[in-house]
Length: 452
Image (cartoon, rainbow, N blue to C red; front, side, top):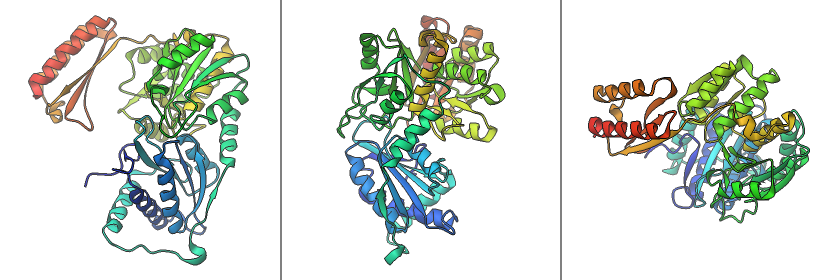
C-alpha cells in the first residue's frame, strides 16, 4: 500500500478512504509508538483532541478518543477549534500528544488526521513511519497489549481550551485594534467562534460572514479559497480590511478597504517590516518558498531583509525556521508562521498581527502592502510527460536558458514536477503579463517536446 501520511497528516474521503476503523487504529498505533519512544515514561499520558466542524469529524473524533483511551491515554477533548489552537494547547497544557481532525481547505466530504508531538510540534517523519507500520501490522491481525481496570484512559471535555487560546492570541499583540472595522470570513470552519472573539477582545468592530457552520458547508464558496464574498462585504460595510481563513484556520488571506486581495507574500512583507521595527525579526531574515512572487524577493532586497527560500510546502518553511532559529516565514497561499508565538501556521494570529500593523501606523492595508509590487505570474500545467527528466533534459535546459535571457532581471522561470500527478508545472513571472504568457506558452511547448 502507498504511504498513508502525506505532507499534512492522513487525508481522504471520510468514511471511504478515512474510516472510523482507521482513525481508531492509527490512534492506538500512535499511543504505542510514542510509549515505546519514551514519551510517556514516568507519568500517565495525556492527549488533546480537536476537530473542524465537518459532519464526519463527529464520528472520527469518537474513534480517535476511543483508540487513545483504550491504549491508556487520557483525552482532553477540546471540540471545534482551529489546527493551531490544538497545537498551542498541546504545548501549553504539557500534553504528550495532540490530534487534529480536519482536511483544511478541502471540500466537505474529505477529512484528515494530524498528530502533534509534545510541545505542539509536527511529529517527525520517522515517528509517522513507525505509526503507519505499527497500524498496518495490527490491522492484519497482531493483537494489541491492552490496559485494563484503572489503566484505561479517561475522556473529558476541556471547554477551557477556547478561552485559553483566545487569551494567548490577544496577549501577543503589540497593540490594540480600537477604531478598526474588520470583516472576517470564517469559511464556515473551525475559527467561526474563535476568530471573531479574538478580534473583538482586541478592540476591533467585527462583521462576520461564513461563520455559521452546519457540518456540511465548510469551505463552500467562502473562505480563503473563495474571496469574492469577502471583497464585496468589505466594500459594502466600509471596513478597513477583511480577513479570510480556510476550514482549519491555519492560513490567512486579506482584502484591503477597496476590495483588492492581499496575498501571503504581501502579508509576509508587511509583517517582516513590522517585526524588524520591533527587533523581533531575528537575523533580519524571512523564509518563503520558491513559489513566492519575484516582487516579494525584490522588495525584501530593497528593504535590506534577507530572504531564504525552500521547497514548496509550509513544512519545509517550518523546518528551515526551526533549524536556523528564524522568526517569520510562510507561503503565498497564506500559511504564515510566527515562530515565537505559534508552532504552525495560524490564520487568526496572522490576521490579528496584520490588523495591528494597520492600527499602529494609521496607514491603509493597501498602502502597507504596496511595499511590494506583485509581478504578473502565469502557471501552466503540462500533463502526460516524463516529469523525472525535468532536471536532466538538455533540450529543456536550453529552452529555460533562452527564456531567462529574454526576461532578464525583472522575470523568473520555475519548472516543477508535480508531487502527485504525471505533469510538470511551468511558472513564469515577468514585468508584463503578455510577456509572461508568451514565455510560459513556449516553455510548455518545450516541456511537451522534450519530455513527452
